[in-house]
Amino acid sequence: MEMEARRHDNKGESKCVIGEEITVDWRGKPSNPNKHGGMRAAAFVLGLQAFEIMAIAAVGNNLITYVINEMHFPLSKAANTVTNFVGTIFILALLGGYLSDSYLGCFWTMLIFGFVELSGFILLSVQAHLPQLKPPQCNMLTDGENCVEAKGVKSFIFFVALYLVALGSGCVKPNMIAHGGDQFNQSNPKQSKKLSTYFNAAYFAFSMGELFALTLLVWIQTHSGMDVGFGVSAAVMAMGLISLVSGSLYYRNKPPQGSIFTPIAQVFVAAILKRKQTCPSNPQMLHGSQNSVLDNGIIAPSADSGSLAHTQRFRFLDKACIKIEDGTNIKESPWRLCSVTQVEQVKILISAIPIFACTIVFNTILAQLQTFSVQQGGAMDTQLAKSFHIPPASLQSIPYIILIIVVPLYDTFFVPLARKITGHESGISPLQRIGAGLFFATFSMVSAAIMEKKRRDAAVDSNKILSIFWITPQFLIFGLSEMLTAVGLIEFFYKQSLKGMQAFLTAITYCSYSFGFYLSSLLVSLVNKITSSSSSNRGWLSDNDLNKDRLDLFYWMLAVLSFLNFLSYLFWARWYSYSPISLATTTQQETLGDDHLNNYGFINSSKHGVDESMP
Image (cartoon, rainbow, N blue to C red; front, top):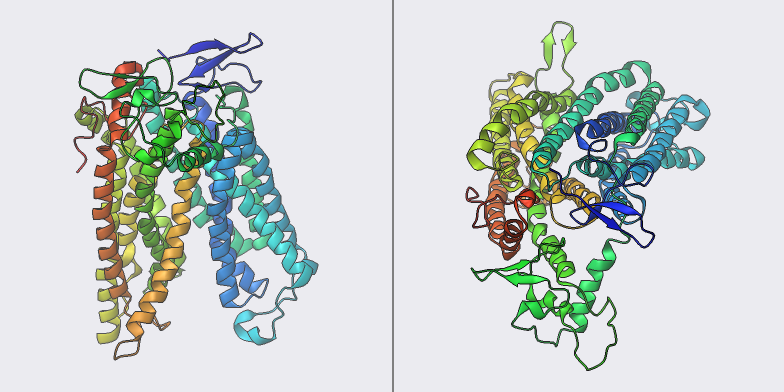
């Protein structure tokens, strides 16, 4: 039965408190577990997710064609426009998470910025349709030097529309995952299992949206014009907002908690101000400690609150909890005195950073599949039938096709089987899922390297062109890898015991994409610079001709880098699983009872408090 407590505020009104978090319905009244939340409510959020990714992906995947053919931007400026647009979306996810957790709440953040994104699509469609808002028509391929580049008001309107889309999409993305997850009470074992199913369903919706964008919507843009294509994106986004609003009566909403950065900043400021103080040997003397000592000597929190147990890691932060005893009753400022729970939340946040960092190389590999692998496919035989050729860019749809098949099979068959073996509600823990995904990513690059060597040798030595289907394995392997890593990372961060920060933590996972793409650009530049300094004076990626370049060697380098990253991840995952934070969290679960066993997805219910199956 869902753990609930009715607490009364100063006005005598009751509020529904779940694990120290208040949930309300659309009117601001206490939510009813029989009417609000669950998979029914989350389904409306999944609708928004599928439609939103469909709309934004259709624009992003064909944007470079529009800015070159219609706006007449030179190739370098066009490429930068696209990469800056994508990077901005992922960075702005942090803003969306912050505004949601601090001031607006998930629902209102999605609704407000969803309309901002919709207005951007509409403005793009209007500009693409009206000749007076574009430079004169010109064929960039045959008469590029005489084509007039869009400048002034025309360029201004384009960038305003583009970054309205980026602002809206960036702020909506993290809140879709967080708001869907908020529909499940993690303290209830049955709903905790459904939460894991929701994360898989969310990635299924994402894959469906991407697949439709890469096929149907891109086809519409190509054959009906970009104005119609942008208009279809606007219509699809409007359908997503309708889906969001339709579920209003069923949502469990978590009200904003105020600035989420202030409590974190207070811990660091207080610890610095009291850096010369000495921490007491007894943690129970720290301010705000409600801990008790168990028979095994481990410190555990009292069961009447959502407090966290004190841990020995990052002891310098404990100085923020030292209360100055000067014989007066003067209350210290929150910037000089923090609670143990407040400090422990900061410790958890710091401890999770290495896990996040290990996924950056994974997204660097993703960048290669969206760039060099497409170029690789362009140098192969794309003919499927006498009159039909496969566009190389369509290869990006392969991972999503495999995900649409694999995700339901994973949730229907693998999770229940693994759950019987491990006892974990997700089948395997988020940390294990991330690790498996990082492991498979290495083999994606191994496959890419082998196939590129085979393609290059056939073209150079035998003057043969291989079929494009030879490079599909690298996309298939990476599709499986992405399902494991991306969903595992989102589940891991969402289930961290950081009160009121779910949307922001989800937003952090999107930053991994941005950093991965930046690292990709850096690696390409470094590889070219280093390999060009050799006696041959020709870099691995210095030519536009893949038959002269050594893309296979670059792929082998990425495979090695990916495997080293996997080994690094094993170290940090083991460090996290065996950390005092995990030990203390599990002790808290045992102290509070069975209803709390599933609060944290990164450890199982073992009495030792660690994931025994983690390497």
